[in-house]
Length: 76
Image (cartoon, rainbow, N blue to C red; front, side, top):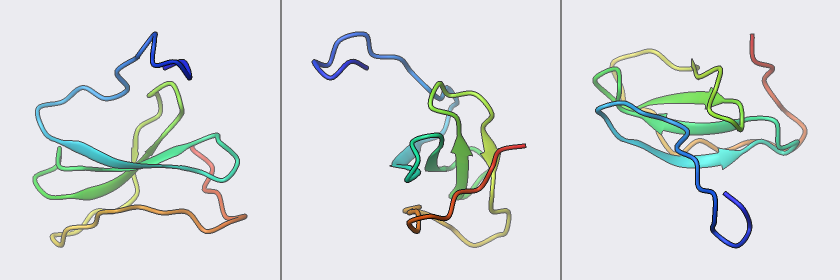
């Protein structure tokens, strides 16, 4: 969305929750938590919502993603 709150765009669309977004230090990716696979997993995506990629995949819940300064994972 614009800084004034106008022109909002939905980035994800599934029946589960997507939450706790975190911008990468360079602004090229957004990490977030999603329950779309049956439990909470960490995903990354491009700022326009494309290239959604699961980074974690195990029976335990992973949530609250955060970035370390200077470390950015490149999307495939």
